[in-house]
Length: 164
Image (cartoon, rainbow, N blue to C red):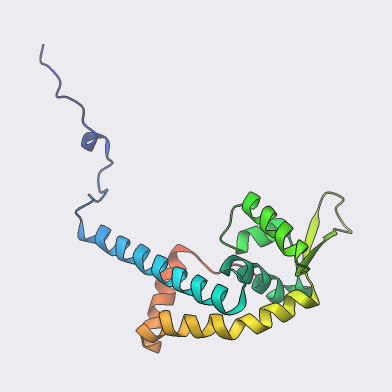
């Protein structure tokens, strides 16, 4: 009877899984650092200049781009970078500020729409130049148009744009 070799964590890793030292993982970490840095800079600038946190801006923008400036909560959750419970708390705060309101769905007694108010649209309109300048300075300025087209294609493989 032969003894089996001890099982290690490395032995349980599926074949083809990169190790932490793999150069591809370094690229992944660079992507995460870039994302974190850009988002932190955009958040700081937007909040400082307008008092509007980036998550609020994102929700207001998604509503502004939606038909009739309204979305079901589930649709809104799919478009923003928040959990459903986090979104519910955020909508509560936006509603308290008069930037959105909730309306019952005429077709579904359990459904609720989140609707952008005129005040919310005005706040978004005033914040947009600050945000777009930040996107230009912290992201777009680092790439040529051709590079951005290629990058857009690559990122679209991982996360296709939401359907409108």
